[in-house]
Length: 266
Image 1 (cartoon, rainbow, N blue to C red):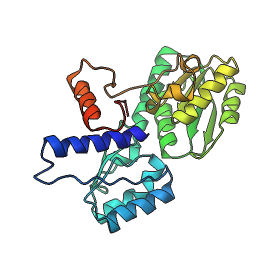
Image 2 (image 1 turned 90 degrees about the vertical axis):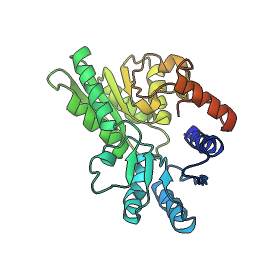
Image 3 (image 1 turned 45 degrees about the vertical axis):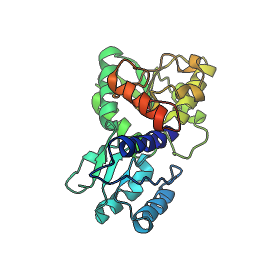
């Protein structure tokens, strides 16, 4: 997820250089790495708020990590902008959390769309579910179940894993042994790619539906194209290679002039 930082930094540099900042003030951008760990997120966010005295926190990444600081930021009245996760809860109770503004599509809604698609287009197929054991994964699964017509499709196995898990092949094997013909993955690229590679190595031809966080060419850094081919996902944003689109072309210009990484979907 390093491109998230690079893109945010480049955009603020562009605003400072070409738009004169905001209301005559230059944006000072400070970044801290929480390593996708809740405890570390608490530490670095408290530092930014209490020591660096930042005006706002932007692009908090990771459902588990940001959940650890969400209440704190609202209690402090710190703008919590562009939350970089699609957890259902960010927008579920806006009155209690007026300082938080999510950016990404809701994971629950994405799961429901997928569930409805499966029942409409693949009735009778048995479903196996693998998900990260936190709000990220559970929101996907909750949406999937609400979107499915359970008279048309049966969930034969549900397998969870912790966000810190190194190897999830045993969970994938359990789905295969349960007779799943469809696999729904509420997982991030590192883990979804493991599942896809395992299925390919085992010559298991299940149809994979994976979270939209995997809809990026970065997936091919984790799994070979032959393993990823045929997997279905969603995408709500414009893609970085749509260079005929004026907004995407502007993104390329900004990243070339102010960015530390080439343009990308993140």
